[in-house]
Length: 111
Image (cartoon, rainbow, N blue to C red):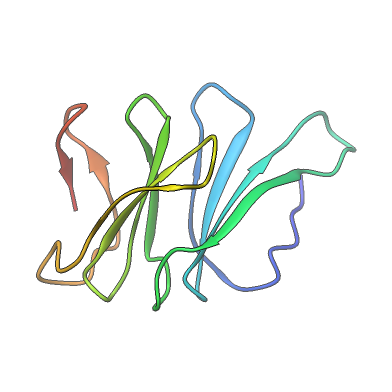
């Protein structure tokens, strides 16, 4: 599978049970793609401008119904996988730029 993102990716995450991959770009954009059999082009589900600075980490959460992103601007954004709509946006959510997000439980993440 090859996807032309148009800009430099900073992080990506594969959905564990559906043919979806999400990508955070250096432009601050978040993209979600659906892929299929070998030899077919992936379909862009949505692209949103998630952060003013680059998307440093992306991660499927909440039973994979949402995507979390972080940025050097110290914010965290939760985006709905089905619609691309913002679920929550937290400004100043952390004290330092985050490179990874990990689910500790369904309701707790560790930056």
